[in-house]
Structures are given as C-alpha cells and as structure tokens.
Image (cartoon, rainbow, N blue to C red; front, side, top):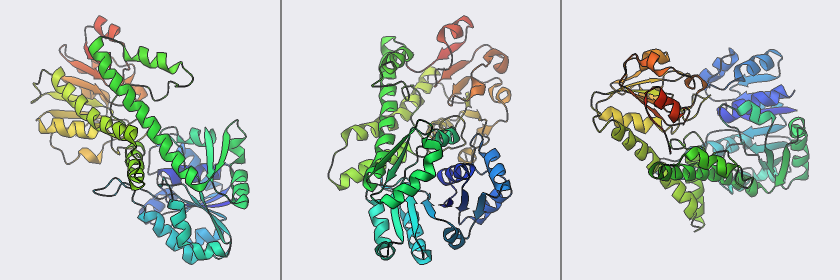
Length: 432
C-alpha cells in the first residue's frame, strides 16, 4: 500500500519506518526542512534502538521517502496518517490541537480522490468529529473517511511494540476503511495479536483511558512504597505478590521516581480537562496527577534528608536523567525539577546518561555532563541512580568513587540492600 505519514516525530517516524519494512511505500512528511535533510542523509533525530538500521534498509530499497512536499506525498498515497504533536496548551491542561487542524485544512485543498485520513496523534474524544467538519465537503462526496487509530508504542521498545502489538485499535464505522486498514495491519495482527474495531470516539478514548490507568498504577505503587519505608517492608515483595494476580499483573508496579515522558503527564491532564467540559469528575485520575506531582518533591526532600540537610557544596552524581532507559526523551523527566532544586541549593551536580548531554541543564551553573560513568562518580558524595540503563546494573561503586565515605540512592531498586551492606556502602532505595 501507499502511505503518507504527516509529522516525523516519535510516532510518525517509527510507524512510517515500520510500515515500510512491511513492504509498503511510505512518504514521511515534515515542514522542518533540516530534519528532512537529516533523515535523507540516513541520520536519526531520536534515540530508539534499531530504528537507524531500519531507516537505512528501507530507504535504500526505495520504500521509504522523506519530504517537505505534502501535496506530492498525499497525491501519491492512499492512506494519510496524521502524526503531529498534541502538547499541553500553555496555562491550561487541554491538548493543543492546532497542528492537527492545520493538517486537516491543508488536506482539504489537496484531496481529489478517495483517501483514508487516520488520526494517530493522541487526541481528545470528538476530535475526529471536528476533523470531519473541516473536511465535510470531501466527506459528502465520499472522497474521505476519517478514522482514529491510536498508537501504543513504548519509547525504547517501539519497533518491537509495532511488530508485536498488544492490540490494533481502529475507530470507524466505514466498512471500506476498516477493510483496507485491516489488510494494512494483517502482517502483524496474524501474530496472535488482537484487532479491535470500535467507534471513532471509542478509539480516541481508549488511548487516554489506557495511559491514565497505567499512570495510576505507577502512582499507586509509589504511594505504597512510602508506607513500606515506614513499616520496614520491601516494596518488591508487595509488587511481586500483587503482580501474580492475573487480574492485576506486575507491569507498571515498580516503585521509583514520578512518571514522565511524552504521554502520561499530558494525557492524564487532557483526560481530566475533557471530563471537566462534560461536568464529569474523574477523581481517581486527578488524585494520580496530584500524587505524581508530589512524588517529585518527596524524593528531592529525601535527598536532603540523606545528606543530613547539609546539601551546600556537596558533589551529587545522577546516573541517567531521561524518564526511562533506551530513549533520549527528557519530556517531564523527574530529574529536571530535582536537579534544578538541588542546583539552587549550591550543590555541584554531575550527570552521565548514555543518550548524551541534555539541553535542559546547559543554562544551569554547577551542573556538568560527563562522558563516562567513572568521571561522573569520581570523589562524589552521593550517587543517585535515576534511570535503569543496563550499564548501571553491575557497577563497582568503590572503584568508581575512589573514596570510602559516599552514599548511593537507588531510585530504581537495582541493587540488593543486603549486598550493599556487606560491601559497607551506605545505601538507600525506594520502599525498602
């Protein structure tokens, strides 16, 4: 099939590349000429394991094209995916849909024959209805079907999630559009995965409901971790014991920092905002957001407590600053408010992350990026394991730090408290 992906951000780029790898001709469109030039040179603007190899392979085989020419890409394609960003509006909790509607207005001028318009961007319920109103003349001429097809790709695991999805959700009442999209996804839904056709509004809400529920699981286990610390119980035992119940499952029950990234924070806020417009009180989701915001403060205060409130001039090393491993995404990472707060307390902050230096910290004095773990940890007072990258899981801390009196604060519970005691390392963890 011939596909147009509008937007080469995380969702559009990964989905477009994976569709091309299934044998489709894919046109990835973006207004950012520098980004398109970058991609045409075989370079990848995001950190995602395996993505660069797939881009080079399918670009070479002439199934994958990168262009700024929207008109050409749309005319060449049968299925148009809208994959532009839907960030939170400034001074608001609602999703900013201006880029989605800009695309719809541009498509209105281009489309002359039947196309399926698919919203892959995360959008509030009824957004598809608004897109249909923009394209109403084309809809009346039966030149378009507007469909919702939310993505469920985890950063760092996106290619695997695309090829082996938990489910493919298609929101449409058009038999024609459903038949074509089912054929498009057939190579991957054959692999014991599930294909769900629902209403367009249903598909839009499934995405928000899924992310909000997972965010709730994270906030729930983080709050329990606080109780475990007070009652001398290991949160890992609680997570394992709960997770063995098939109705609950163990995924997203690992205590740690506040959730972050491109989805959970903005989607929980946007779902609450949508519910408020319909005068529905989503009290559980509201509590999740409140708990997550409080989590950032709690852990920062715990750092001060670990250092006996003698924070000034202390050398503090962060191992990992991204919100999760195997990504370079810093959006709403818990490390940002933590490092900013500690920086104001006149600490010397060092950090190392496998995905490189971060622009978020460049304006801050006394915050320095190191290119390797050893340099970041040398003679430090406190090591904070913020992100569970694999290379942090078997460290010889004494050899790295080269001093006896230092502390390890393990926000991901990677290490065994018993073994750290045996090594005579002052060690703190989450909920243990």
